[in-house]
Length: 175
Image (cartoon, rainbow, N blue to C red; front, side, top):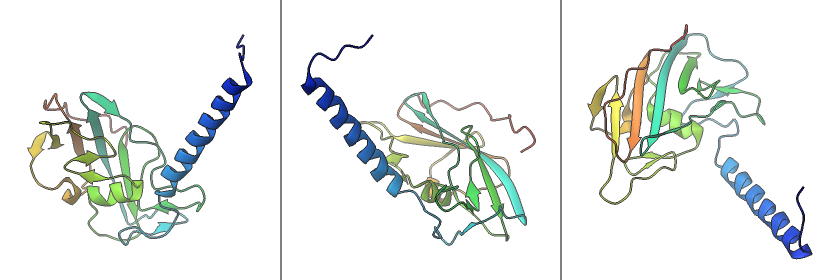
């Protein structure tokens, strides 16, 4: 049983909850609300002309960072961006009403988080560290934002050591 020792303790808890809620609201404000992002619309239904999938894994000093479910599916707008996720397993869905090239940078823009050489979804390398980019098991030195999203592309972003070649992603399960 929790015992509150003083009214000041209760006030501190209420203030901390309010600050946390305000921070969560501010973080959500950066997420798309249905307006086009990079020329990518948020439509009432998923597109059916181009339908491909990719896998994205992010590691913060060896620890996995979850790519959340429902990226590109803003609840307030009740729509689907042509690039989105359904589940928190790192599988990206490209379901577009037309053929065009999409990039990893487009996905991060829709997600509303940074993708830079020194910042991957808010995870930053420390002094003397770096971000290593792996595409289909091969190390890439170019701009990760420019990676084209092709069918069954497997991308791993490692922030800080260890910088080891990731195992290939094989759990496509019909995707």
